[in-house]
Each structure stands twice: as structure tokens, then as C-alpha cells.
Length: 404
Image 1: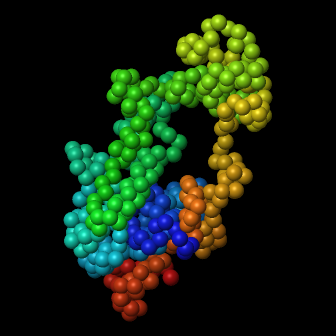
Image 2 (image 1 turned 120 degrees about the vertical axis):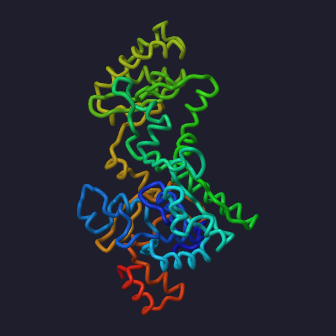
Image 3 (image 1 turned 60 degrees about the vertical axis):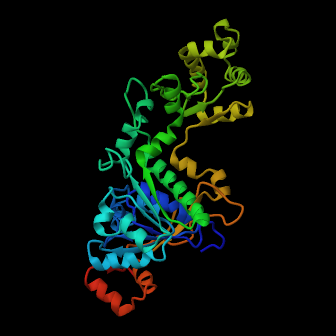
């Protein structure tokens, strides 16, 4: 492990599955935390989720699982068996954090909920991630990313009015919740440094999404305005801050000031709009936004998006062409910063996204091989005093397993 990472020395027992929870613990694992992934025998279900390359599902290492479980150790346990719960109780004695994203009450029934574990380790920080939190009338309501995108209002402001509400192109509800939970855990760990106390960290997907939607939520609460679907138009509603079709590809412009408006019109050859008295200021340009968009897009259709991006950036007009994922990961900027990182698997190296920030001291990153199901079971239980004979007996009883 790289020396000096900011969460080095922090031990996390990770009971999370699918996306929101694993994305949370990934953030701390990338920054040096020792994250022990507690998986069922055979591994978490998402290890075999649908994938474009079925061979990775057969290997129980799908890209969707790898993406959020790098730098973690794997301990396989059948939590329905009392001996497995005993093992968890022993691990909790030395743990700093427990993180889970079951429905409220599931961990309690297993004997490893917050009420039980805080008695074992008063300094424990217990992070419970769920759709609606541990309190309130919806606390036991099942949730998933699509439900949260719909229920939070996100879909009501996404897409074109003609086509109806639209989901984001990736699981934003899960990801926003994972980021929120990681921030909450970091804060709880810091708070413990001067209180000495553990605590429950209660993270709800719906709450997290409302936090991310602070702009349209505040606009309604303050002014009563309900944001409609506006397609690819900026939240400023300025017609030159939107997506435009080019001869090939698309480009997004953000001409928001009078100076940028003038430079844009001159660069794309629409000087006639500068002389139009109906477009003398931004309120009037917004009022005639459809016409402005139509004229500018007609001009942009003369060249491809890459050409226009070069010209407009040279003219100091904020813009960016729409790239697909294959183009993005090949960007020299990402290579320079090491954003796309490499991890080892038994079948060779794979690449995945690393941390979203860099530190001057103790920078985080992927520095451990991707774990197979139960790969670290033997070593983790050995640290608790189970010798090989005891471990083999646990395997024979179906309590644990190892892929070593």
C-alpha cells in the first residue's frame, strides 16, 4: 500500500452491494482505507451481472463490479449462520467503520445492526445507506436508482418536453448517494478524533438527490417556479448556452456574456444577429431563443464539431464537443493526471477510473489487484486467530470459502 494516503490505518467492514454503497467505500479504499468486502459464498450477485463481454461474468468479475470494488479485500461469509456472525463481532472490535445498504432492519435481524455492534465497539461509525433513511413513513419502501431519479424530480427536468421525462444516462441516484455517504463518513471519522465517539451515519438516496438538485429545489421554494424540461438548454435559459448540431457531431456552447455573444456571432458568421434590434440584450435574446438557436445551428452545420470546437476556443468562446466514452478515456489530459488507472486480475490488467481529485501529499489511487470472491478469507480469519485447520472446518461447514 502506498505510504501516506489520508485514510491509511482506517479499517472498514463493507457489507454493501450493487452500486451506491460500494461506490461510497471505494472512495475511502482509493485513499488508503483497509476495506474488507463481506460477500456471500460465491461472491456478490453483481459480480455476474449482465455485461457486453459474458466472459467477465463467468469470471465473476464484471466491469460494473470492478468499477466500484477496487482496492478492497474479499471475505466470504454466510451471514445466516451464527459462526459467521461471531466472526463479524470479532472483526468489529478492531473496525473503525461498518457500511451497509440493506433495507432498514435486515442487519438487526442478522445480529449485526447498529444497536448490537455499538455495544461491542463504542467508537464504531456505522453507515446505513438506504432509499429513504432509517426513519420516516417510507423507511421500509424498496428503492432503486430509477425510482429515485423519478421520485426526486430529476427526471421531470431532464429531456425534451415532446418526449417526456428522461433518466440520466448513468445511475446518478446511486452515485450521488455514494458520494454523499463517503463525505459523511469522512466527516464522522474527523469528528471522532476530538469526541472519541462513534455514531450512526444515516444516508438516504432521496435526501442525497435533493441535495444534488439544490438549484431547481431552491428556485421553487424561493420563487414558486417549477423548472420544466428544457432539453439541452442551460439553466440560465440563454439560447447560446445549449447543445447544437454540427455537420457531424454535436457541440455545447456557453456564450453567457455580451462579449461572448459578440465573439460567437462573428466566429460562426452570424453578424446579422448583432445588428438585430430585437436581440439587444439577454432578456430579448431569451424571448427570441428559438430563432437564435435555429440561425446559429444552421451556421454550425457547415463544419464538423471538432473543427468548430477548435475555432471557437481560439476565439475565446466557451464550448465543448460531445464525446463518447471511447474518446474521453483517450484524452491526453486524463493521461497526464493519471485519472484512468490500471489494476491487475488473474486474467491480466484492466483499466478503470480512479479518484476524482489529487492531493499534494499521499495521493490516492488503485494499487491492489482486484479481489476474487473470498480471496482474502483465510488471511483475514488468520488475523483473528483461526489456524488452517479451523479455517478448513469453517469451509466444510459452509460458513466461509476461499479462492486462494
